[in-house]
Image (cartoon, rainbow, N blue to C red; front, side, top):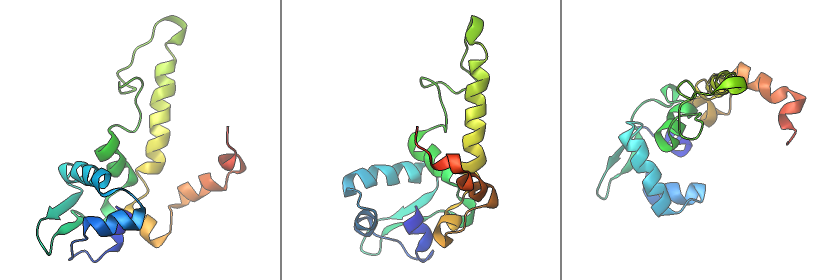
Length: 139
């Protein structure tokens, strides 16, 4: 999607170009692009002048939009949305943990657009998270 966002919006980009630029197999990338097309994030055109291009401006497509199109909901627990999962007894507060986790993911992924990525300028809220020393510590 970043490759498409950086391309001329009036031209279609070939699958082979996208595949080579991101080192993704053409077949696998074709499946991803099909998901993105069904989500109305990309348009496709067949033929010699065909390929793929964004369906909307890069500033209006978030990382969350792309993830949802390809993977489904941002957060789920055993295939169930956090607000629909239920627990019994002492585990009841776990639902709120999962809802908070989803909210945290949204706070980043719904605020970073393809345009942000193309120009290399992340929102201040994301930059602040990245500056946290603990953010870079693997666990």
